[in-house]
Length: 324
Image (cartoon, rainbow, N blue to C red; front, side):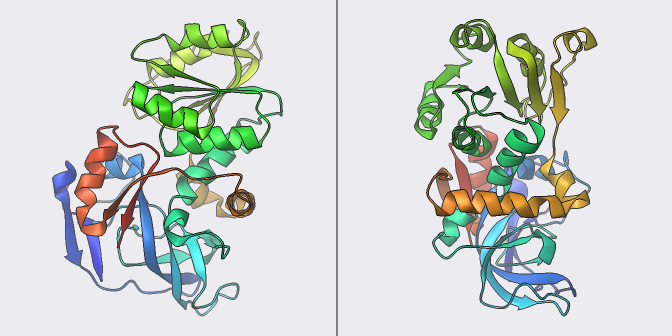
């Protein structure tokens, strides 16, 4: 089979298309013919050696959509020919992947296979951030940083589905602001032009927002506390800035505010069973049309380096897909 391999740590040029051996299916695993896979910022970090324990050569990628070719001897809930989404065991930039059955999910017939590849990482993450971690209550307000990206545009929609009264996004330029507004944000702040703390306080009559989703870290985290309401929850789930934010304990106890962390990767590794209900809810929303994953670009598998350049340079809007 063909696959993209990180040949050494470095820039997009280290991605190479190679012929690889077909993966071997274990007793509780499933072999999937890949229809599409998505490009995530975590793939960029892994390519540089800044995320995970993998050493080159390795196949990058986290999630796929496709059709089951073979099931392991102990798998009872799936069979060959079924359409699924999954988190593969050893990278997704390939024509075939193997995934554990507990991290594989049946795809409703109404959902297109290519669009389905954009579902797992962004929608599972967004749903967990807003429900289990952020504990969003209908009528509360939400601030979503990096609102034009895959998680951002998905979280905007899910926040609305879950009953948020006001959804504010931050972006880095006006073009991305249009993307976030189309996704359903009530207000979008271009941080290249405006101080987001000042604008959020204006939009909320000085109260601040109830839930903040922060994948940037550094100064953004520190400044976010300045516009977090009493009893508010700041959910930290990434550090795309590469910076470390410092939080003062005095900013928490008397205001009853919380700073919470979440990693979908850690949850997949240690508590994969917690994602089954998440998958059911997300797929229900997509099937009934209330949630639409925004797809910005599609690339062939052999053009993975161009896809990485787009994401790494923060020029992507919505999800970026690779099509084997």
